[in-house]
Length: 112
Ligand SMILES: [Zn+2]
Image 1 (spheres, rainbow, N blue to C red):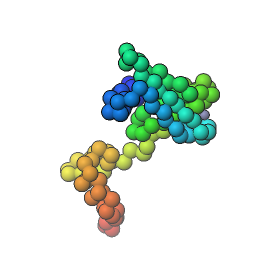
Image 2: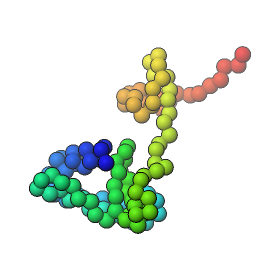
Image 3: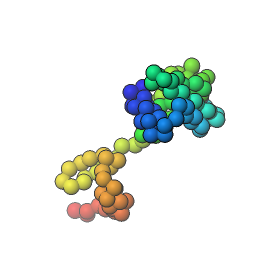
Image 4: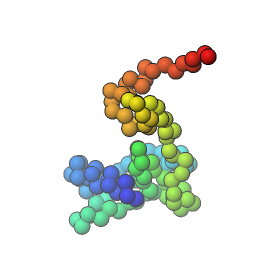
């Protein structure tokens, strides 16, 4: 829960609350899910109603699906590499200006 824990701790620090509820759909079965995360005085996080992951966005699993499979699979976005300024780099790591530029690039083939 490394990145997820960091994400939640930052969220609690920013929002200055003791409890946060995530509402959405279970990643596995698609049912509505409500996950409550509680932060106690000692800084311990307690999760109820299912499980939560933060990768590039928040994913949730209901309790039943988490019991069936406690790992999150099939969630990764497609990694697109392209040439930036003289080298290849995943597009999601580019800066905003370069990402905009990438949107208007047009692929073409050179006939030999
Ligand atoms: Zn489920």
